[in-house]
Image (cartoon, rainbow, N blue to C red; front, side, top):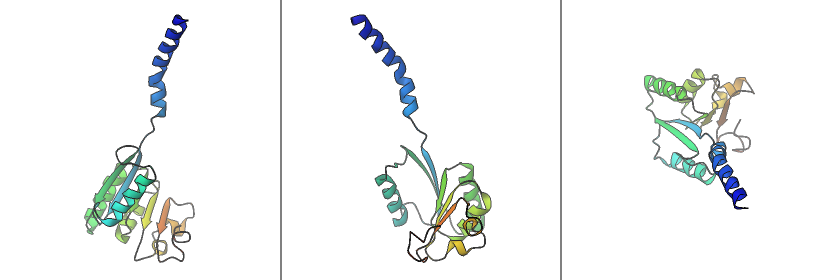
Length: 152
């Protein structure tokens, strides 16, 4: 009986690294492009909610946060850098210039635009306004019953 237990233990030890690797999943890569800093109340609340949902930065989530000014060349460089990083999804705090720049650069990466002072779906450049199958989600509290009807 000792021999069988020993062989079973060796088998378990040999299989352990394979099982451990199978359980490891790739971290979700989230790109955020904003005119407000990461320490601002919007982004602090956003990251807190992500943690509540089980997404923790540098564990199962990798956040690349880029804070930009509202100058065209700064926005274009930041958008290019963010898209080249290959995020799984991009979130922007709703500045119209940033949204337009993101939509112009990528048609593959899903983009979430949270707009406070304008309706992103009304923009002629919004993929969601032209194509129901687009990879963009636009949210605006000005749309009827946010978020049920406010996000498209």
